[in-house]
Picture 1 (cartoon, helix red, strand yellow):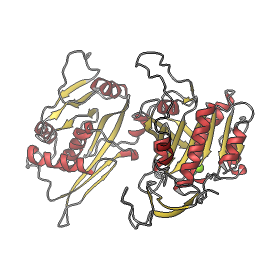
Picture 2 (tube, protein in one colour):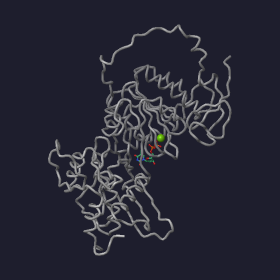
Picture 3 (tube, helix red, strand yellow):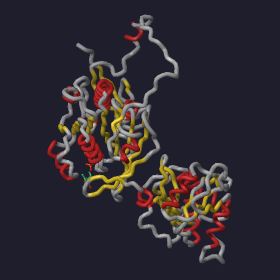
Picture 4 (cartoon, helix red, strand yellow):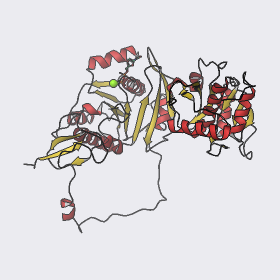
Length: 468
Ligand code: TYD
Ligand code: MG
């Protein structure tokens, strides 16, 4: 009989201990270490390997030149999804898709499954969370009930692998979700790290040996981690997150890791009464309902991967009634805001110490690019001075601690998108002109943050008073 070992496994990061600990030393989580019983120690010691020492088989090493084929892909025929995966599901690859409950993961995967099945591929959808009837109801609501997707409500990995291995090889298998799966090879309860890891391993092995692309759905915890099995993230080929907030109807699909494609592309969808619709022109969506007659609003010409994206940056600067003024940011890095505020004070002559500052990226989008600095600064100065910014201008540029405005990448693409959406000028750092075709709109060059403050203040109704 196999030796039984009690091991203590962190449910958050998967670190293994031989005794209980209140705090995981690997990830710092409190009360995350739980006892699990397994047949064999989860990490095989050096024993068996040492026994083989000196007896390994010799294999041929190869050079870097030689056959390197693009992996064969099956496109999902949903443009925004294919953009994120890099052109379709790679045969034999495993994708982990994470997202808050109710965000639309099952809906997206049902739509993708149906599209593939209608194109003649074999697609199996295994639900561990919902009964077959519930999945059918969703398919009906999506108008996809007639597509030949093969359904099952199962949670045992051995049974699933055995079933999928029968008959024609599926092009795609969806496992909704990995946390509900369990395998007989380990004894821990379903949902524990040991179970999730072992189940994922079995499904990954199935994908690699048969060439079926497998999608694993993973739950996400409050802090945005794919719950429990972060270990699974290392095992799969791609980790994709489905984001959005309940107050808005659009959803963003983003690849955080992708062995077969880009990681900075996003796919934009809108949740409608009949499922997820692709948003082909996201800039128009993010600028919807914008009020440019009010101060404190600037349009940022950003980039998400290779796609330009215009978003509205809103700022509110108001005298504080508190001892310590408030700084609140939604959709942007708070440290970045502090930096921009400090530069505006040091090099722009603004006094913001007695003001509350709020900054919001409209539409619930999250921006990580430093190129948003200039748009944020423009919105802040506009709110403080009471001067609305010109409605036809977009802003981009990175602000340095010296007050200088530095050029950012892909300026032509940003300007082109702005021109396409009807903007006629771009306030941006001076870029090197060589190699860049004439900009499609008027480029108003800004070299220093002081220039920005002066231009906006000149439009202020309170022009005669100093800005403070
Ligand atoms: P679901 O795909 O079940 O989310 P997840 O699998 O990520 O938990 O989507 C659930 C939400 O989407 C639910 O609140 C209802 C909404 N929804 C629509 O608005 N329209 C639709 O056509 C469908 C199928 C769902
Ligand atoms: Mg679901």
